[in-house]
Image 1 (cartoon, one colour):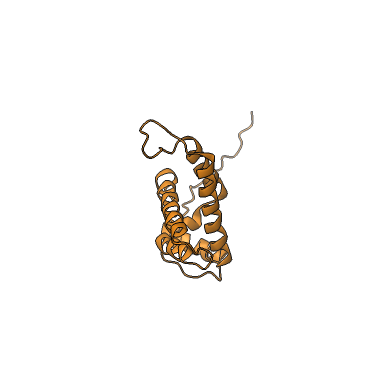
Image 2 (tube, one colour; image 1 turned 90 degrees about the horizontal axis):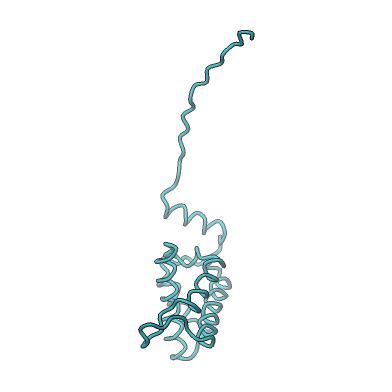
Length: 139
């Protein structure tokens, strides 16, 4: 065997510059929704949606507000997402599956999963929120 020259490789130091998580999220949202209304919190998003022109009944407002905050609680506990603008269709499908199979039924200790009609009500509320946020260029 011949004596081949040995090359030495010095380790390269790579400095990764990252934005803090909140700034990165804001930059991402600003990129995808440049003309959006500036919403500071998920609570503000839900309250603007509930008081929008599309929801007229007080009873519907109460139900939709409850559904909106339940959605936020689920996304925070399951996926660590506190900003609804970061929720994807995958997250929503997981939430709907949870409603059908695992959501505790109020008043029944050992019963899980809500009825198809209630799931349809939740789906209509979430669809309304999604469409309203998209139409209002919120994200």
